[in-house]
Length: 388
Length: 116
Image (cartoon, rainbow over the protein chains, first blue to last red):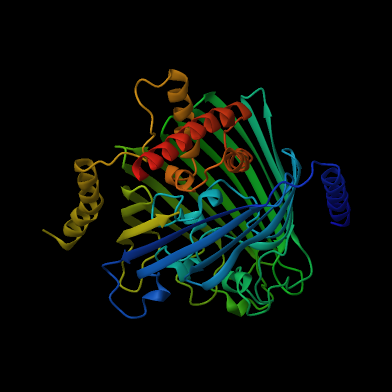
């Protein structure tokens, strides 16, 4: 770890030196952009007032305002603030120090590079009302039982990232990123990551264990034609989440996407190996073995196709799911092996250049029965999103 | 009809209803402001702009940005080109900027005409 920081410090010093020899600053350019989405999530089977234990049904809103500032040829800054289910939050607040296309150093608060979806996480940039299950942050059914997705998106954090992009003969694009950030949090006795604590200020906006989480991403984009390409990528992230710096999480992912003229095909897979404190076996439903019983593994994947049908209407078909293997705490609705699958049919209709209606239907299947004995659910989304 | 069948038919009908209404009143994407007699190169530049930029966001996000100078567009397109997996080469960026230059000029001309 010490070597990694020394390397990062050296890269930062090189970047600053290159910037110092660069061209004089241009006039400062400021760009504002933003989006607002209001979505109604209808779950016909849920009629009680305690629905939030199950999902965020009813209205949810996500609104954001972003300011991008070019301070010169080599320095830019981005600030993005959001209002959503968590209240008012800072999704981005960082500087980019770019020496060349191949070397950029990002410093501040940002979502570290992981997977392909997070680039489109803003509701103005994805065509369905909700996110793929591996990236779900509260719109999935039984979200408390599952503690949401594998890596709920977005995942802003404080830290440093080095990234860059390079083209080979206008045919192949290589992207890379390596970062050190505060990492996710939970209490010492946590049985899973605590995403509310990780992104909120309840225990201050600082690292809870003084040990950064590290990760990286590499991706290759190959162009078939001027308007078609394929991207394949791999990502990884590792850190500790407890105050004692003992319990680890490791997330790895792979993604493959095709852009064929106007059609987009996307596949993505994530898996998280999650350690937990098993010192008190009475907390768990299943017997804790002498070795290897202090973690669970959560897999998630999705495949989707986005096809414009007319100049104003897009059809989106998505299949996604998660599979969890490992012990659960007493009282959990999950079993040692639990799965959830979902099929989504959705449309996005542009009623104006800047305003889209989103409608989708989701059919759910769970491996575990709920208190009513059900394993299947149907839910609906109807939303509107505006961008500028 | 069972409750399950009713739910299923409802579930399928909702997006289909939106789809049908969309098809019947299809509205064009943000107008390209190109005419059929424009050079083929310009139409090719627009095609690159349309396919590349809509990979990650709606075209209106760019077209409604309000930029009126080439310098602002260069900074904006350069930032987008550097995005991971953008698929935008330097050559693509030049094509996109050629199209945007023409578009901005035509918007300015149209506005001046309207104010006369």
